[in-house]
Image (cartoon, rainbow, N blue to C red; front, top):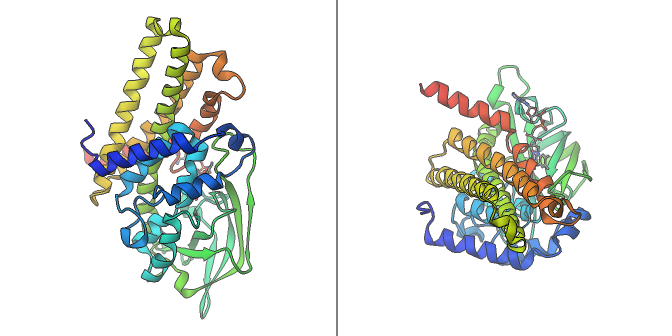
Length: 377
Ligand SMILES: Cc1cc2nc3c(=O)[nH]c(=O)nc-3n(C[C@H](O)[C@H](O)[C@H](O)COP(=O)(O)OP(=O)(O)OC[C@H]3O[C@@H](n4cnc5c(N)ncnc54)[C@H](O)[C@@H]3O)c2cc1C
């Protein structure tokens, strides 16, 4: 049925499922205390589940971006907040594509094995959906760059060993898409401070932070790529990949919500015999499978260097909506039991919305799709 999946993909998905079911325990604790699950993250690295898209020569499994998305689905199916340990390699996609041999040889094996965490800092207080508003400035010095500016809502910025920073390197009015560059920074030295943002609605086991750069010096070799001015193109490539990963999140939370509802129905067999409930279960299962097939197709193409931004945006839009809709139905059908404190469905309900917000807000995905559809006419 899933022709996009190779035997390695299928095996990886079942390994990821087994890992999540075995290791994601005390899930409520991590949510309640907003605690990053450090031990689980390390174990996932040891089992080779963090760097599935990283090339073998850098310690990964070289199975493509679809592989990482399949793991994401299985992890989010069991617990979305803990499942975001996969974002500990956020930025490795950029590094692998555009980094120097030295940068890749140093960082990628550490990230793949769960021995270091990376983050990717693009969003700012005045720049999210519209990255042309980014104002963090990288000023050229004789022997490197000086960065000043601040970023917000950055996953793992408070704990990352490696930070990929999107900054302006050309302020001239005509620079447009050539105005930006990415830089690599470790945590050492001066001019960098980060503050965890607490009290998020959902995915509370996944850290989010503000990060500030004040005359932060970076040597010339910390630029991503040979020349400045390629950051926008690099970001566009990154968004295609990370939107695919987000599809695994939406489908995973939807599947996990259906799993929890089925468990409730097994415990309450009289409800399962209701035709109305059977209709709802059929609708949920259908939208989950449709959403999964859409991302499998988008990922299949992405892994063959045939990235289709419109298709990826459709898959992300549909996966996000499916996650939100299915968990809402599951909470409704399980009723008070789901709403009671500590029931995983109440946590899933809070976790689901983020997929419609980050990696491209839902309405922005629609604009990408519409642009492609309208120009194809
Ligand atoms: C938990 C979490 C983790 C995150 N992790 C990262 C990270 O690791 N790195 C990173 O760089 N960023 C990260 N982000 C930021 C995230 O990608 C942005 O929040 C998102 O891109 C939206 O940008 P914004 O916050 O500036 O909101 P805005 O751009 O102000 O958008 C807010 C809302 O306005 C509407 N809107 C905006 N523009 C348009 C438009 N043109 N047309 C129609 N509607 C529009 C949309 O409904 C949108 O949801 C994270 C955010 C969260 C909440």
